[in-house]
Amino acid sequence: MKKKYDRQSKDEYYLGLALATSKRSTCLRRNFGAIIVLDDAITSTGYNGSARGAPNCLEYGCLKDKHNLPHGSGYDFCRAGPLHAEMNGILNAARTHGGTSGAVMYISGTVGKDRTEISDAYPCQKCQKAIINAGIERVVIRTKKGIKRLNAANWVRQAYKTKDKDILSKYK
Image (cartoon, rainbow, N blue to C red; front, side, top):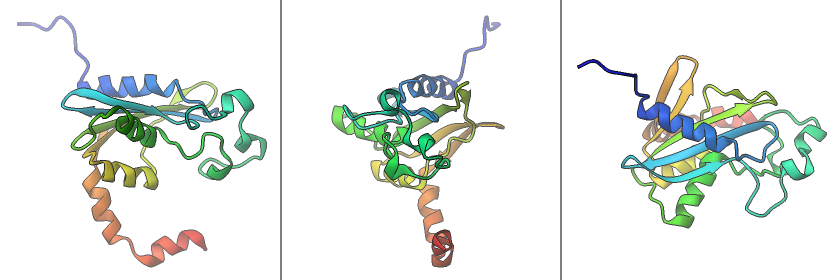
């Protein structure tokens, strides 16, 4: 029997939903969305932005832009706080009693005013720790080479291999 059309993979489907979720972001620089899936059902979504009901950059402008702070710095000055999409997804799962243990997280996003899709949307170290503690087993992202599946247990193993001098060198 011939196929009438090519059906998109589940990874592509969930990454597309994560990308759509990123459009709710209140950050003017980068927009990320995260989807948490357990047993092939979405248990939670999250996007980067300010805390519920708090002022945000869409309403008041970006403090990081105003003070020329580079990407990856100045989180303490950011109205969006360090509420990343991954963290928001985990927190929303807790609010709604959605499951995360054994789940898969899909992350996608855009950058700039033209909303160019970001490849290699790896979670930061803080989000990696939250993902591990939430019991999420795998994270799926899109890279320039295609879809990449990251095993959260590997982050734990990597932490044991990290030397004190490597950590401290970031602060010198």
